[in-house]
Image (cartoon, rainbow, N blue to C red; front, side, top):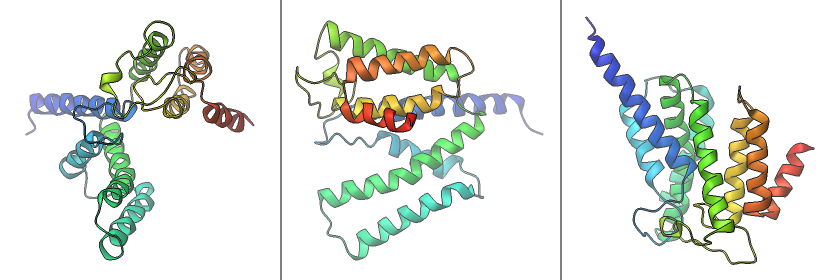
Length: 213
């Protein structure tokens, strides 16, 4: 007989893990320790834990192609590559594509999707940080960001290494906003303000134009 309390605790655990993973994915450049690069391992490490402790025997077929890419990346690294810092970082990036995607699929499936309010909180936090950096204190929260780099002639970072990365995160968030059930237009306007006024990223604006076409 299943213990109802055990099921409740599991649901709480799945929810907490999903929130942490989402935050790590939406704030991927926050650094708890300087490892000498803007690429941070925290989402990847949590994803490994999720995949190896929470996954089901049958993998979703949509993830197989990502798994194949990661497999060939590992094979190339082992048989053809030199073992060095640059090679290890590239391998990490290829593995992250699969494991973070797989872990995200697992936790969202167990939590019946992602909560719209969670995405709204993240977007609003970006707006507040970007606003402060743009109009009040340029280096606000820079100490949290790995390898931050910008100057007064460019846009702000908002917990990213450079304005273009900020723009990429904004565009990524827009894909979620398009599925919002409430205040979709308001949040699209929120992100456009961040892109045009705060990030001031030409490449980000180009992506929006191309996407709009």
